[in-house]
Amino acid sequence: MRGNISGEKLSFEKETAVAIRAVAQACAVCEAARKTGFDKNKKSDGTPVTTADYAAQFVLIKEIAKHFPADEIVAEETPPHSLAGSGADGLLEEILKLIPETGAGEFMETVGRGNADAKSERFWTLDPIDGTAGFINSAQFAVAAALVENGRPALGVLGCPGLGFIMFSAPGGVRKARIDGSGEQPVRAPERNAEKIVFCETARGTPEAYALTEKIMSGTNARTQSVKMDAQCKYALVAGGDADAYLRVPNSDGRLESVWDHAAGAAIVECAGGRVCDFDGREFCFSQGRTFERNRGVAAATKEVYDKVMEAIQKAGV
Image (cartoon, rainbow, N blue to C red; front, side, top):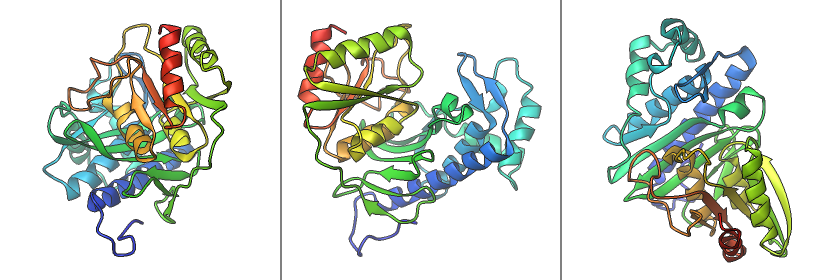
């Protein structure tokens, strides 16, 4: 687990250590749930949620709130009684099986702490299972934690069990550790040829979304490759040098992006020297509410290809 690095005093050192520990614990809960089994349900917006989502969120909030009790928390899941048409009592019983020695009252109170409005100067934003569909289908998912200060992600931690690591922002550059938080080391991204651009995109997009991404890729006038993947793991690929850009085209149904879906990944890509903005070239402000009302789409890219990618987006007229 993270402690001092060579005795060096780091900015947000305690926050980073706590976030890594919380993410490692939540990853362990998720992996255990995959082995023992978990219940699935649907939220009111039709998106999937599992008992592991709730258990992982409990673990994340409990660890962070223990060390930073005054900090507000913005998390994806609301207490399970909000699920439409669900047997809340039975669901709660199944959730508690994943987090032994936790009572129903403690669970509900802790998970309920994640309902802040994302408008304060400092808050944590958490996604207990980013890519729940990937988690259900034994594909990629991520556990994400970020600290936001003055509208910008001050630190980000991504646990990617399918990739086998936790990646996080740190002074001096991006670092990663084993999925249990041990074995910390710097991430040294290899030099990449800007004549070939590897793009990441969602594994569960619509035909229209994939066509728009293909149009943008063609507009770069470079050789391109598409990697389809769930969750914020795509940000980790860009920060780690395994991809050059991540595109998320604007949702055709008008659905807005949520802060917890991007804060940790954005912090890590920017720490690696890349840039993250919307399709109009605007930076994201993470303290204007739980969703981004002023932004369209998401583009994250290394500094080597950022300009070329943004030019292609404008050329495509997306």
